[in-house]
Amino acid sequence: MAIGSKELASVELDTFENERLFDELKKAKEELFNLRFQSATGQLESHGRLRAVKRDIARIYTVLRERELGIRPTPAPVEAAVKADKAEKKPKKAPKAAESETDAVAEAVETKEA
Image (cartoon, rainbow, N blue to C red; front, side, top):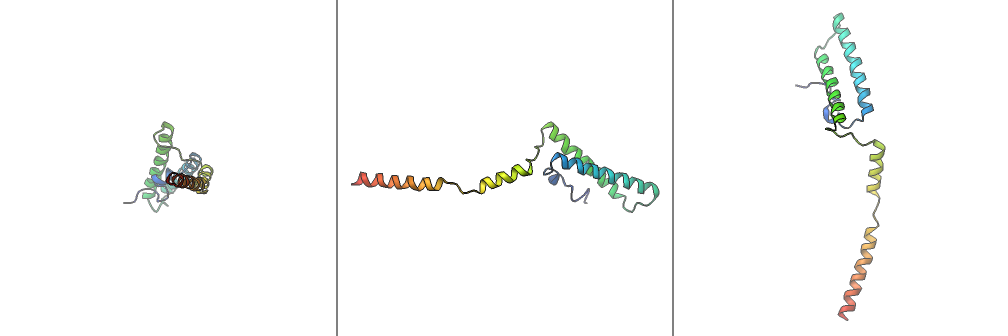
């Protein structure tokens, strides 16, 4: 049984920054208001959607509170993550130094043998 929105799974909420969580919370509250209004006027087609939106709101509040208490880590900003990825992709100069070290070791071995 699918409960809640497919797009607001708790795993996906972990990747959102706090600002985006507040935006999602605002959207969910507006949707809940509209659904309640439809329910009161008898126009609501899917009563299960009310329950799903309420659970989405509760899920967002839970993630925000856990971050506030330090239980759940806040994701790194996107810009910092992109910079970190670029830094990891740059080729390291260590292999060149290693080559010179192996040459030096080989020369030392040759001089000891001679």
